Length: 412
Image (cartoon, rainbow, N blue to C red; front, side):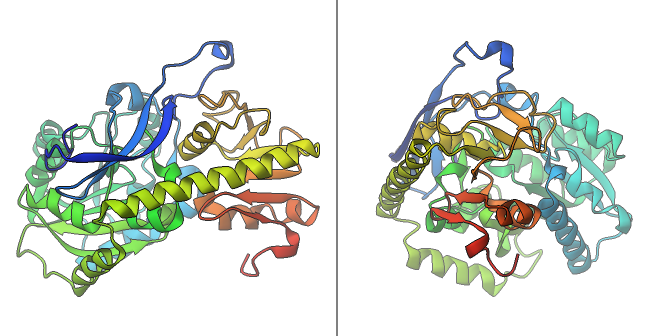
């Protein structure tokens, strides 16, 4: 395969998570007996530019035309976007004269956070069902994929952008180079692009293999991001790791010379080099850790099943489908998945065939398997009474642990 960033041919596979269905194509009950299409889910490392990527692409139209994920359902994420918007407005002196464009804007959660500051806003989102939610909330949104052509449309309609953002979508991009060309087209000479993407370094350190699924085509370090942007005449001038989604890379990108390059960029380059993120051996070790986790989690669930205990999934996120299908976990070991998102109620998790139910609609189990482990603090605070009544949370990542009232973190 050709590398998605540098077009190099030296891409070596290191992790095979078996053939899996599209993780967000939830199954209606009337199709429960029909096997959905499965596709290879394998991760590889480019020896030329160090990009980690999957080797099979499902056409974007089949993944994003109708989308069950809604960012506004998680308090942690809403608060993260509120704080980030306020920070960017203050740091860069943004005001009513400035246009902010959000790529993959979903239900408009991030763009809504700019309303108190009076910024002009434009969302770009391909999923028509969540576009309706954004527009109902007063967020102007184009129902399109963002690419070079879309950038021309936005610029003609609203003018150049002072700020372009992409949170949790930059690794989705099948038309990666067209998207970056679009950013170059749309951005003011002194403007900035802020990208938040799951940080590959955090995935490695946390054994967060469940972030690998067909929607996520690329997994970035600072080094691989810099190589991508350099091909299009852009540079990363500031960088940090923010806690959302178990650790996300936030990179501030602009035209060379428009913004001073911070010391944080140099520090992260050195840290990535020291941690071996540019070496194939690091990813072989990561794959070995995944298999150890698989053995430990299956042993625990089989033991609980033998004891007659019930286990439900807490949440039905996309990453949960990766874990369940890679480890071969189905309704024998996990009977239900409890969800807050009404777009998922009554459906089945792809492949695993675990029924998704509304939270509180079935009796509480002996334990919950927390699939959305990146929001564990919010869940523990919400379910304190459940834990005090003898319940347990099984948290598989970053390391397998069982949380009960007896070992509940004091900060919760």
